[in-house]
Every structure is written in C-alpha cells, then in structure tokens.
Image 1 (tube, rainbow, N blue to C red):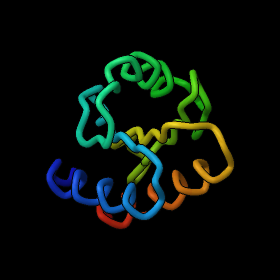
Image 2: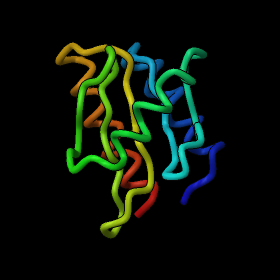
Image 3: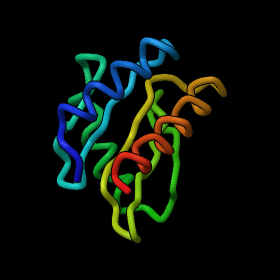
Amino acid sequence: MISNQILQTTVDGLKAISRVDLCVIDSDGKIAAKTFDDVQGCVADALTFMDSPAESQVVNGYQFFKVIDEQNLEYILLAKGTSDDVYICLLYTSDAADDLIG
C-alpha cells in the first residue's frame, strides 16, 4: 500500500482540477485521505460496500468504487455526488490510484 501522504496529495490535486470532493478508505476501514470533513458517516457504507460483489455503487449521495490490486481490495474510493461528472472523476481517480499502487 502507498503512503497516506501520497494519497492525500493526489486527492487534493484531483479535487483542485475536478471540484469533486473525494475520500480514500483503506481495506481496514480507516480514512487514508480526504478532501471534506464529514466523511465519518460514509465509513459504515464503505464497509458494507467492501463486502458486496459490486465494483461500484451509489449510496446516500456518494459514489463508491473499489481499487483492487492483484485481486486484493486495497482501497475504497468515494466521491461526493451522484452526477455523471462525479462518476467520470471517480473512474479517473481510481485509475490514478491503480497506477500508484502498481
């Protein structure tokens, strides 16, 4: 797994470009990086999502996406919002996270 400092720098940069709030939660349910403060309410939904077979999902106004490396779940990436623009940002950010891990 990559350092939280690298993750934080990455999500800060992506938020500056996309204007979409992001959060990265590791496979233990701990917040690794975030661009907004009210993320604690998302952790329970992220933990439920981790156990689901879905690769992405919209729950309670957030889009969740799994970041998987070599068949192992590394992170849950979530974006605040449900529009198509937010989904595209989430896909791009997930690819960036995969590049950092791999």
